Amino acid sequence: MIDQQSAVVSLTDAAASRLRELTKEETNPNVGLRVYVYSGGCSGYKYGMMLEDAPTAEDNILEANGVKVYVDGQSVDLLKGSSIDYVDTLMGAGFTVNNPNATTGCGCGNSFRTASDEGQARSCAH
Image (cartoon, rainbow, N blue to C red; front, side, top):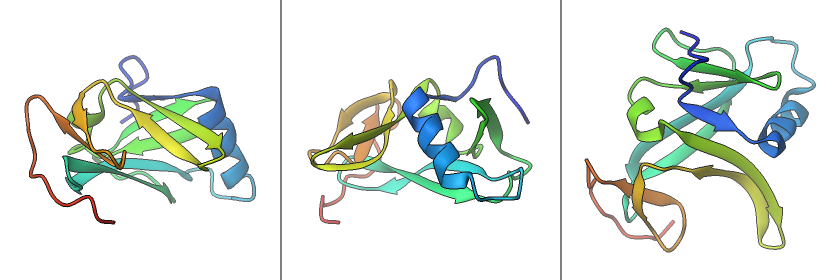
C-alpha cells in the first residue's frame, strides 16, 4: 500500500542520500529501508532499521528521493509523523528518528515512550 499523501515517516535529504549509497549496488528495484518499533529499552519501545528485499502486504510504503521505506502495520501509529535523518558526528554516524509521538526518551537515546502507551520500562544496558 503506497501512502504518499499522509506518509507515516519522512526522510531528510541526508538520509535519502545515504540510503542511495547503501543500495547503489543492488539490482533488486524493491530494496528499501524497513523501519519498525519493538518492545524494549528502558523507556518501553526501541527503533529498528534494516534493508529489506521487498515490502509485505501489510506495509505502508514511502517513496522519497528514489528510496523506498517500509513500515509494518503495527509500527505505523508509533511512527506517524516521524522524520528519519542520517547524522555523521565525532561520536559516530547513523540513522536517527525524530518522533513527535515520543513523550520521554532514555538517556542512552535508543528508546522512547508515548503518551497513549507507556510501555514496559527495562534496563538501559545494551
